[in-house]
Length: 195
Image 1: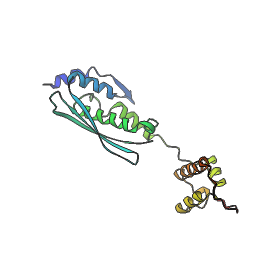
Image 2: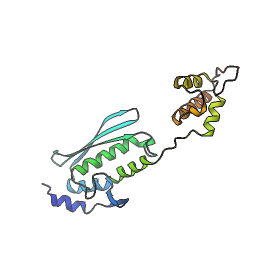
Image 3: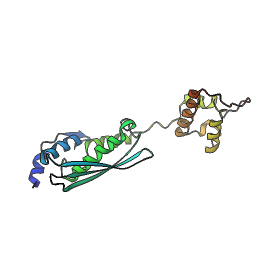
Image 4: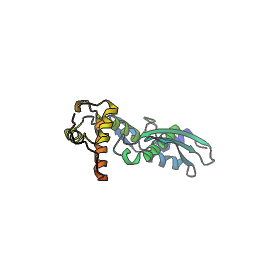
């Protein structure tokens, strides 16, 4: 049976990374420590939900005798960080495993949060580019006669370029480029309509 002293000893082998004056263990370090304590133990992960670009994951840590030692959960949003554009599910799994191992007392000398979680949180706090670019305004203005563009603007109550929000400009830009890629003849009215 593992004792507190065993956990304390294995925690001394864990390398940490300093973030703003506080040390955090990486998840891979927690996994190595777990394997030192429980070579035949298991780390099980389960996707609880993946909907609308949001992943919720559960990780369960079991000892060599299949007894549950710790459970951790994590939540990640697709596109919330550069890494999450392609790997939000993997990131979510790593976070859940790190938290579950922390519940076992592994790598928690300074924090339950792992280095990866803290780095991700810091990245998510950075201001996002929320301004409509001049290129987007010009593209939308020059393609306002495309029926899909008109319909979108009407549905959102957009009557002037100055009313565009970044999300709207991004959606309209995508819509215009998709129409251009399809090279389908566009139903453009003969009379000019602009904002």
